[in-house]
Image 1 (cartoon, helix red, strand yellow):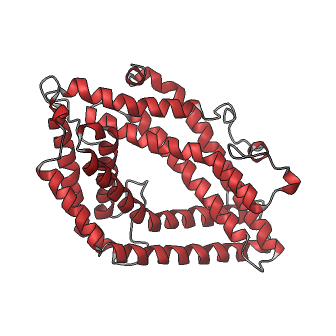
Image 2 (spheres, rainbow, N blue to C red):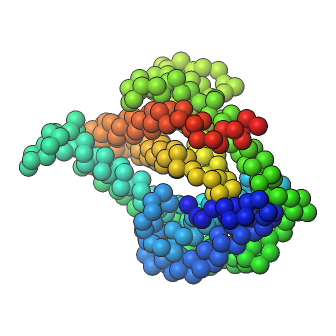
Length: 362
C-alpha cells in the first residue's frame, strides 16, 4: 500500500490535488523502474518476477505495481480526467500489463503443475510424512511431467521473445511519454476542483457497488463447503445456451463450461483490485481486500493451470497412461479452484464490518 494521499489535508485538498499527488508518485515509480525492467527482460527467459508475489526482480515488480495502480485510478476516477486521454492511457497500460504478465505466468504455472505432479507421484519413502501419492509408481507420471515441462518451457520462451520485441517498440516509448505527463500535470477536468472528501468517495462508490453487485451473482452457496469434490458434476451450460447431455459433450463443450463457470470469478478479481486502489487513493485501509485479492489470484492460477493440463492431454499420440496422469493433475487443480472459492466465501461476509460498504450503498 502507498502512503494515504488524503490523510494530510483531506478537509481542504481538492480531488485533483489528491489524484495528482497519487499519480505523480506512481508515474515516478514507473519511470524509475522502466529502464531496470527492460534490462531484466533482456537478461534471460524467466527473469521477470511473479506478478502476484512481493519478491522477484525489483525493477519489473515496481513497474507492474505502478501500471496496476495508475490504470486502476484512471478507471475508477476516470470522470475527473479528460475522457479521451484517460481511455487511451488505460488501453496502453492494459497492453503493457498483459505483455509483462505472460512470461511470469508461464513460470508460475510450470512450478505449480510440476510440484503438484511430483507430490502426487511421491513414493512416501525416505521419511516423507505424507506417504505415497495416488500416482506413486504410475508409468505415465514421468512422461506426463516431461510433456508439461516441455510445453511450458516453449511457451515461456515464446513469451520472452515477445516481451523483448515489444519493449523496444515505439509504443512503449509513447506510454513512457504519457507517464511523464502525469509527473508534470495530469489532464484533469474542471470538476476535479471540488473537495476530495466529497468527490473521491462518490467515484469510489461506483467501484464498490460494481464489486458488490458482481459478488451477489456468484454461486457462493456452491462454495460453502471446502474442496467441492462434486463441483464438476454441477457445471451448467454457458448463459444463453442449451444444456448438452454429458454423453454428447465434446472436449470443447467441457472447456466452454469450465470457462463460463470461471469467468465471473475472474471478473470479481479485477474489481477487487480496482477497489483496493480506490481505497489507496482515498486514504483508507484495505487489508481485507488484500486478502481477497490473494485468494482470487490463487483461483485464477489454478484455473489457468487446469486449462494448460487439459490442452496437454489432447497432444496427439500420447499414451493412455500419460493421459490418465494428466487427468488426475487436472482434477487436482480444479479442486484448488474450489478451495479458493471456499476461502473467498469465508472472507467476503466479514467485509461489511469495515466501513467501505457504506460507500457502495450510498
